[in-house]
Length: 359
Image 1 (cartoon, helix red, strand yellow):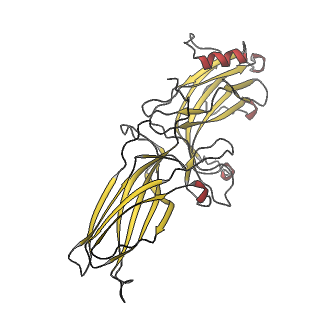
Image 2: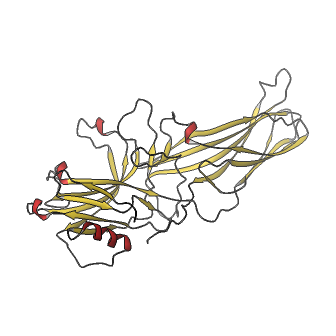
Image 3: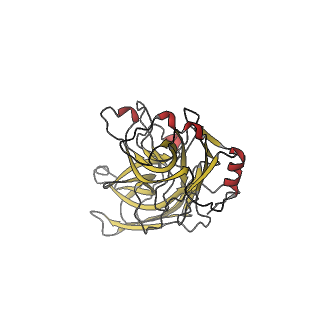
């Protein structure tokens, strides 16, 4: 273990230690969250030490909380008592043993098993004039000193707490399947035959920053002309809390000047590359959760078993192929119509080399 993350309470009585802050969701199971709390009993004054792991949806900045409103909603929360110890010793992983060895005799271990239906860490990109923490889904581990684990009448001082943010992340599956395919035939006024559009993707999963290859085949049986081809990528962000709302934001769009004349065919592959760098000013765009201010990317597609409904933020992407068709001549611009197909695509990060899961 090359790095240890540590946060100490204001009074120095407790300190929280983690060996990692990214925990991998393998769809059917999630890495166990393990850590150690160092406790100095002399500063407890007969109180106890608890640790909780919370997954929460933040829908407002802390600085807006001026009338006692809560701008976070807990999606899932679990807490344990670490001092005084409450039960027998469990088998400890190599990471846990390493943390306990580093902390010494005052170290007390804890672990959490997150359910697989929790959302991954996602932030909604703030606007240029927004301040405070971004809206989105985050995960927090908090150690605190209290008389009871969850007494609403007990005021816990900030000096008696320490916390670390962690991330729940998913990586692209190892097996990449063939990409989606869609086709559509559309007839137009003054034409008894259609324009047939077929579009397909090379593969199902693309990594952030890689170009997406879209194969386009057109059979234009009409007397009209396909004036241009537009390929775009849309991000669909579903916010699932009290109800479900889906927001669509275009993250990439490119027009190609190829024309397809009447009674002719066309076939070509195009490439488009959705990048966060080209969408920095889009307020509400979903990006992968970040710790502090490190770089991130567009939010990854949410992989799910589909058995249990997720809450929080669910991300998906679609490639949209649009043909602009007109008959040309004086009324060409007035009689133009679009032929549109959409293809689902998965956008994720590859699993780092050597990455393994302790399950």
